[in-house]
Length: 141
Image (cartoon, rainbow, N blue to C red; front, side):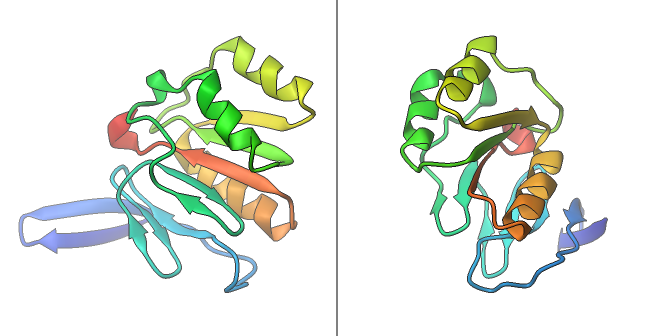
């Protein structure tokens, strides 16, 4: 865990991720908190969809509870092998039809808390898997 001071009265906790592969041409998550995601060259303060070579900050809803099959349809257009959803600070089980819908299209599907989703995404990227992670900030869960 890393402590980040934003000003003299505010201290934020962030989780640092130790990376196995430092491939600079691939989107990887270096650290995350309830309020942001840190990639190698930028900090993103919104919910995020990330893949090896794409980042989209306006594809997700503001809250995990508002995520729908229509959002999954947009992700499927990216032709992923696996979709991971980080539901926020804690695991929030999805609607069962999400998994059924994606699995019928022969795409792997996992929902977990956002921290686990960040770590799983990086591991799958290191394995050169075609993965998309939909990451909801903890503050929006």
